[in-house]
Image (tube, rainbow, N blue to C red; front, side, top):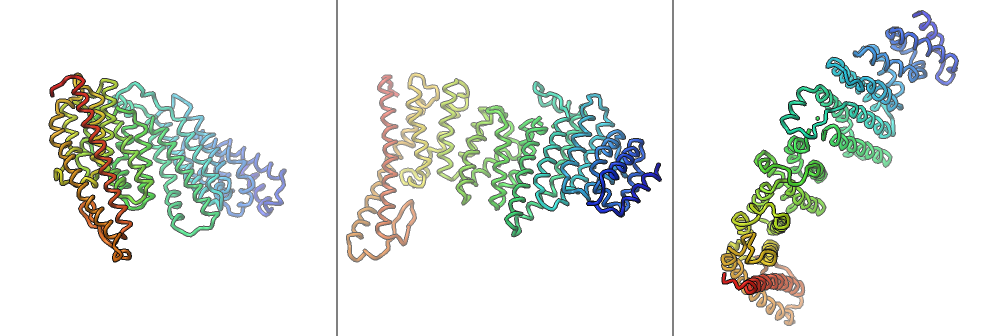
Length: 536
């Protein structure tokens, strides 16, 4: 019968693709399929390894594809000639590579992976076939002249569909130790891991290709196509985070594995890399349950450092969008830890920051933590009493007493005043659940009275500055001259009188606002003590 196949191929080898008749093609296909079904695929391969029959392969290869794939699946081994035949079909019909994948992955592996009794040998064979088939698909995609993103979409969707056929055991009610033991014993975890690794290897060349293309000058059409490819790969990676990763691992484990890589991304200079690092961190952290991350986790490498990286971005990065995103992250990140962890992280950050705005942000978070603790009567062991007072001393510390730079520190001071005002209103002298009334004398002496005196000194300074500016404005001599003004201990040279006037008035306005809140704090303290008849 081998002679029959050779004879038919010889008759058709000179016929062009356009002139090949359906009847001739059908006879050849039936004959070739019979060979394959009888296990004589090598004979078919010999015919199509001859370049003289390339036109014939292009015409009938599509029809032979399901039969070749079935042959491979039934043999459960990587038949080199069968795989090479698939490769030849992929080469000559690369523009339809997405259908190859549909047959190879969805059609063949779903049968095998649906068998719950697959032994370890079959599992390994399936992974081996999957990896080998990917090489062929990759070849087909690389040869596509245009609109590769459409094929990539179906390829990746089909690959992910195959991943979902790997049934992983339910670990919902298991602790970490039980999960690890199960992962060692259950072969499906090993298969999922190897398949996932193969998928990442598959998309890696395309990622580098897209990256290189973005650095080149492309036509508008190529730019659009490159962007579409980028979107398809990003969607696929997000799908992998959901399944199987969130099912081969816990959310905390995934965060732990990726943490140091994300820190490296956040330390880079390129804005695009930093943005990706922030968004990846958001994705991983959002998958964690609030209040469930143990405080001991903060002792592991990276967990405090990632917060410090975000602080640097929110303070120093020129992009307003990234700064705002980093602020949002800090707020979300803190909520994921247990009560002791939240206290520990906040205290570390607020103790080490030198930025008044960051200190003010963290002080506001402390206020929220105290409010939650009072409402649910949980967490007061950390956000009340001595622990709270030790925390409050940090934002209320005035390094130079009444001569401190109140304008430069205005964010920190205002946040501290608002927190005190809240505490004195929310917690009565009689209840004193937060312990604030036990420390109020020290707070009044070391912070409030010093602040009151300092605001007065600063007001006098700027009142004098205001007089000087007004005098220069009234002076004809100064109408066309530029003058300097001292704000926050620094001279701002080269300002026109009108500009200088605006700066001084803004400084006085900030001091007035600070003075108003300070006065309100004193009023609340006095009123509460009178209500309870307290002599504290």
